[in-house]
Amino acid sequence: MVTFARGSEAKAVRVWTVGHGSRSTEQLLNMLKESKVDTVADIRRWPTSKLDRFKRENLEQWLREAGIDYVWMGETLGGYRKGGYENYMRTESFKRGLEDLLKLASKKRVCLLCLEPNPRGCHRRFISRALHQEGIEVAHILR
Image (cartoon, rainbow, N blue to C red; front, top):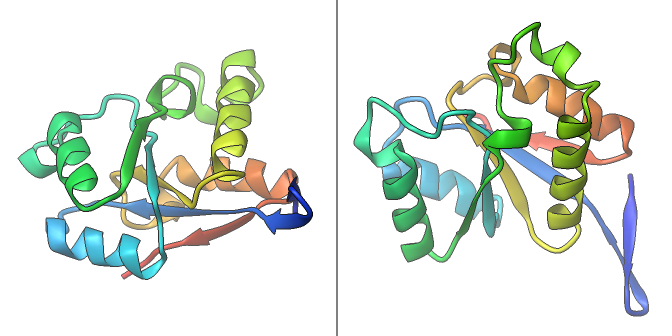
């Protein structure tokens, strides 16, 4: 596991992931709070939803009202890439997004958010693998 020095103490870095699916606002908030997440990194390429509560502007608002920061990282870490996500992971854009995520995760308890509840059916699995290769522990919030 990667550790980052902060003053005289080192901090182990972990990143959580979750898929919002059709969960209620309360269900998702409870899942985030149980994991003590303080920042949601939205990695949906297009941060919208058929469910109003998960449209970027609404999600950002109710997360902040609950005391959880929101950041959209879909430009660099979002899915649906021409040629496939694994090919996209070789680009400078992806590497920059991963670096930004690592910087954020060294300061905050970050949870990657996408649509699919199961990470096996989501591009979060590829990001998780890249994080593991960097020595970062990844915890998937499932329920």
